[in-house]
Length: 143
Length: 227
Image (tube, rainbow over all chains, first blue to last red; front, side):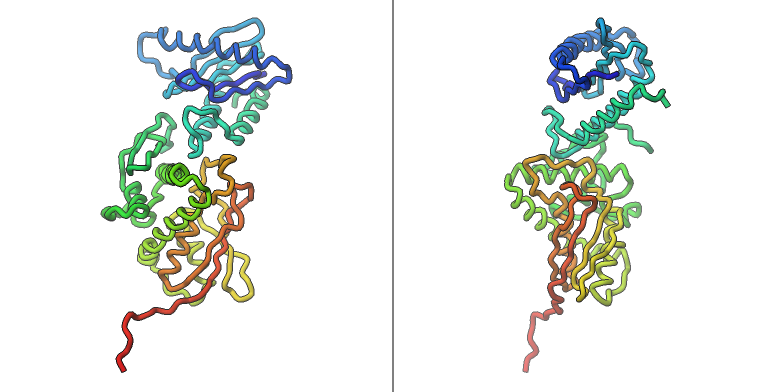
């Protein structure tokens, strides 16, 4: 189950943070997201493969904590998507798929002429789409 | 085709308009045609591929058109700050576009003269909107005298991806369309009043434009017969 989704801008400024649990640990999740940014920077600055990488966008599992797994996705404009999930047996393909759809929703939100790049995403339609995607994550196998 | 959403490009096509584009496009005829109607630059050379639909050629350029219009509205809001002023300005811009557009429309579409206002409305909805926006509208709600009708648009390329922020709730985002219709009809001797009844950006399910014919102005000749 996805507990938190975050979109972080290229200057590490938060553009969208949403937690999906009823419990009141939003602060802890924000802290996890913040720490994962360091891991992202590390991955970006020291690429594992020295040759050309095909899909640099999906960063994969950033680091597993005691209860959570954190996945990262980096767009070409250095906007990062961070996904925190409590599922222990999440498939890589599912996460990639999710990030792809999330990226599409993000692009639609940013294309709104009233959205200021660099400011928080205030689109209600984006929030609704994201919560629909989160609900259906992991319920049906990747199709 | 399938445009992959990879990079954003920036185009500064006019001193006050900076367009964020989906893909790095070079300036092509559709953009300059759009600017022609808006800022009266010299018209571009006709290109057989673009004969029929000046601004909307393929669906990739449809996004550019949508983004251009969004940039214009944003810039007007920044410059004028008052929502009512922006509405008026959009209407005025639409009027200026309409008076020029009607000649192109009549030339390309080859429709014969309309017998009455009902036929005019049908032609605008089916041929005009199709030619310039790529969507057809439907005509309904005729009043008893046949001078007022509603054009219903279910699909509007101008408003793809747009959400009105809370401080712009009085904005008629597509007001340019009402100006275009008013301007075009004035050039064919019909004085009309065009208002928005329903607006999808405000929560309604369709766009509804009410077109009211005020009067038919016969041709006036500037000289008087000498007696």
